[in-house]
Length: 234
Ligand code: SF4
Image 1 (cartoon, rainbow, N blue to C red):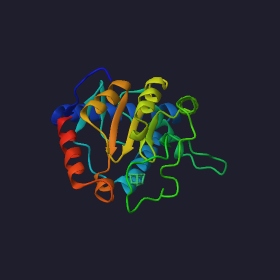
Image 2 (cartoon, rainbow, N blue to C red; image 1 turned 180 degrees about the horizontal axis):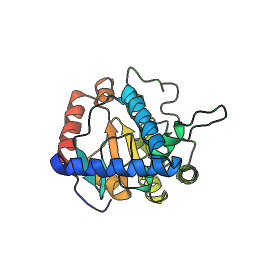
Image 3 (cartoon, helix red, strand yellow; image 1 turned 120 degrees about the vertical axis):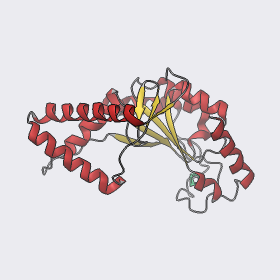
Image 4 (cartoon, protein in one colour; image 1 turned 180 degrees about the vertical axis):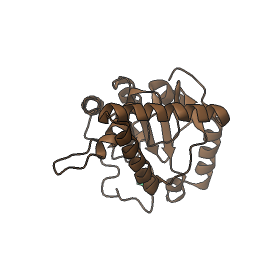
């Protein structure tokens, strides 16, 4: 990230950004099919399919961060190679055939089995607190392989990814340029200082589950309050 502060874009500028994004998406579909009518039809189908899964709320705001516009934690920022790869993979999925294997555009990559919490609903109970099998070099090598497969949108999870904080900084910083990294975290142990370090290393965003903390026998309500306070400071 080159900019230190994120900005929310709304109103006419957001509509202008949306028009440019749509034009870019249409150009990618046109490049794929060479026929504007087919490109339009396929994009309409994709919009309908995504609306069934994610809902059809219109995008009214964008977060401008590091020169890219974000409107979802499941879609890379625009403009970027990561965004184009994502859209191209979605377009390819429309080609149904018997031997077709849809391309993968997003990977949730569990980098550790460790976690500080003991959530009641955890389905990783058998694995929590096991030692890590993969070294930072192993993780970086896997990221390079994923990048080679044109996967540019990676959500780092666990266990609790922040349990490997130093490794997290290393692997994000050593990964190929152009990957959008997110972390899926309970937020336990996250401070304003650590958030800044992650952003400096290249992290795009964090999905922080407050529910995990509240359902844990370890995380106290005081800790949850501290987390809220840390988030406000960001
Ligand atoms: S934060 Fe996630 S991994 Fe950790 S105990 Fe809770 S559900 Fe399990």
